[in-house]
Length: 124
Image: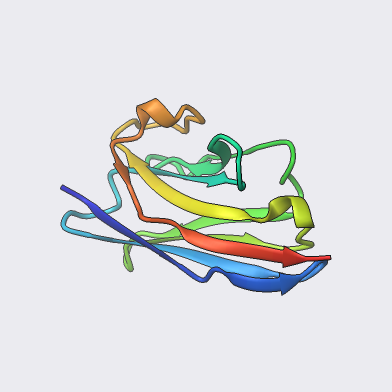
């Protein structure tokens, strides 16, 4: 069993930056691929980014490519999502999730564990 806890959300002005962290406990994080998803108000959950455990391949949604960067620190059992040039459309609850799959995936159903989410608000 893996427990995931997100942190780093908050209120930021458009154009600003936030750094989200996903910390794992219970089992080592290093053998899981990790994804970030978000759910804007009144909308469905959508994929943001993912990083594989095997070779740290990364994958981004088109809407965040070039602005967001995902990275992992296996020694600290943490995955970070650095978000730059934030836009009002990025406002959402952000969730991290872990999957036993070796590679990256953007399909929510392929993730085994989920955190509780952290709120990101972007003012225009």
